[in-house]
Amino acid sequence: MAVTRQASALIVDHTFGLTTFPLPTPFMGLHTRTPGPTGIVTGEPSSGGYARVALSGKMGTTTLSTGRATNTGAIIFPRPTGAWAGGLPLRYWALHSASSGGFVSLYGELDEERIVLANEFPPNFPPGTFNVDALFDGLSDLTKQTAKLWLDHFLGVGAMTIPSSVSLGLTDADPTSSGSVADELNGSNYTRQAVTAAMDAADTTSGVGSNDTAITFLAPTGDWNVAAYILIDNTSPGAVLMRKMRHKELLLQNGDAALSIGERQLALRAS
Image (cartoon, rainbow, N blue to C red):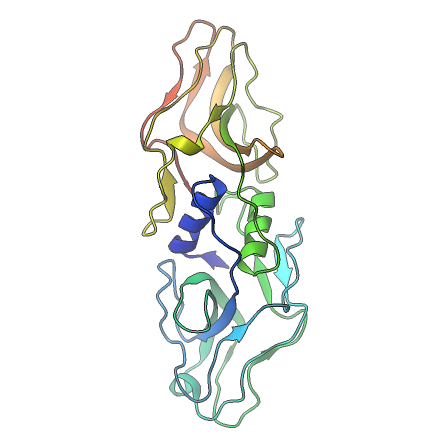
């Protein structure tokens, strides 16, 4: 599974508390060509009785340990009255925000291509045969928990609550997809910094969100260790949302100048 850049921008803005992305009503479509990261709808049938299928009530919630969501209800497309896509193989699926038009949020390759001709049995996915996998572990800046919440959100099975307060912290080791804070810096005068007001709306062309204002920590009055990674935390209820390696490790010691993350130096994406 992959996330389009527009969907990545929606995820970043909502995760940082900038704008709310309401729980969608998702529709599954079939395509001869992948929508790709730009989400361009190409190769979707437009005749022969084809229609996207609403996924409401058909998908289960994402399993945190595997990051996988599986259909719990049958996904059945309409019976074809003519050849779909001119009889070309349908190789890809996409998650659309509407029954027609809208935008593509997620997409992937079908386990088996389908050629659909007139009056044949329609494409269908019995329970347990359509899987969607969340993005984490090197493919995304999201932690596993955040990736699960967002996949549930896009599938319409559980709303991702917009965080009430988001802060930025520093660690000397990778928080990993589990969102560990075991290696967060803890020297004298260290404290996480509020980050929402410093963030600009994510770019829908790239899917990247970045800061348009510098984010400055307090000056160390004790040794903090090495700042190697950044973590983004939901202050309430308290969970790491995203993490990212710093471009350069920095040893922070007593008497050093305050660390400042300059404009556009914090860049995060969901895919």
